[in-house]
Length: 395
Image (cartoon, rainbow, N blue to C red; front, side, top):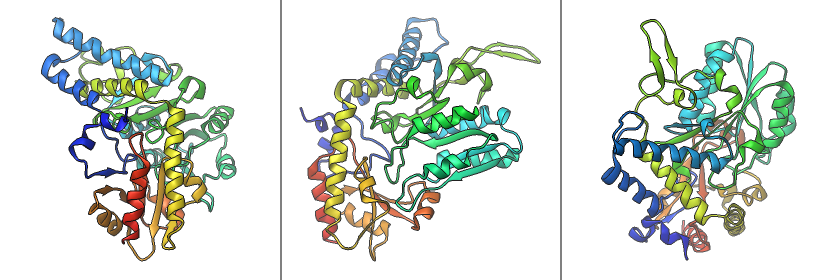
């Protein structure tokens, strides 16, 4: 079976060659069906009604929490549903950082970061009088681990970094970073938004403290994300928002929260989106072997890099060997702005990303303002690669 056939957009829009899965993935039919069925057959609020429709919906919602926990190998009570990975970062910056970061403390990030894993920490240190340290990349675009290690001090209270760059595709050595963090007692926050759809992540083995990702990058809907908070440190985290559904008892002068994860989920959650996330995980479990996926995606990246190397005007943003090793290939074309290239490719139905990819510090470190990004997923083929290359040759 051709897995591409499970994604209706490719049947409905056969002219499209979609090469922007690092921005968002396309959705399989079973995710669309699951959300439609919820709205047409099972729509009710959760954790409130005692009638069977509401109780069944609550059960379905909590079943997804169990699925997500199993997917990343943690306990269900360690999984919090958010609106996005971006909210997950802001959640910890405010709900943990506001109580645990003080003047003079240090937070360490890297030049690889997406703005969503940079700006919340930048704002936190500004509010607290703390210090934001930024680990650099090397000339080839790879993270400089020696410089990273040298920036870690006894004052480092949090290390926040991506699991995989959304610009270069570099897969970060998280085990190495965890070891550094544990040596000094710092907490580790991982932004897995880019990595989660491309590699198996075992959080029990990884032993990070916080991790976040969005559903829409793993074939699920927009509007829902996942935040992992390690059980042992949940008491250090305050509710990010307060309201209905997260409180045990409300008094005039004080209130008592429910136990985690429920104390972290105020108000009516994105129920349909959570149901869609559950269907996306079912889809992955049934159709994707991550080792085979890595081989498939890197074969596409390798072929694209090697074809582009034959074109004199192409300039890669990082070491071509690095770009061959992931699902992202990023480059520029001499005498053509990235936006103009993307607009030209659109005439052929080819969808690529152009700009700074919400990673301005990284682009500045690379000495460029913008770039063209091609990103692959399970539904891409070698035919997509050659269609792109042939279109570029016509520029």
